[in-house]
Length: 48
Image (cartoon, rainbow, N blue to C red; front, side, top):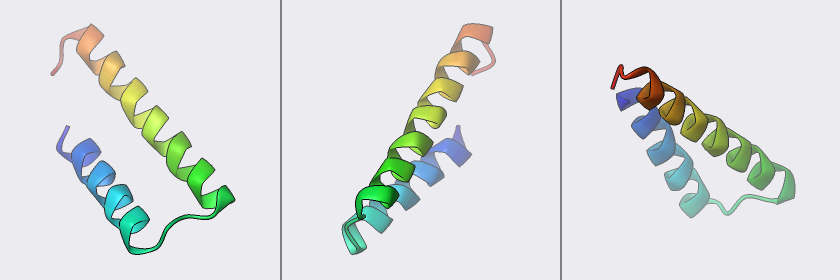
């Protein structure tokens, strides 16, 4: 969970410092969706 939180903070900071273009925005969205899917999977297995 700490790694996921740090990744979200890093993505948010990068987006604030320099607004992403189209390709970068899609990349950020894909990373965030994957992180959310990991959280859901971990919650279902009960390891969090």
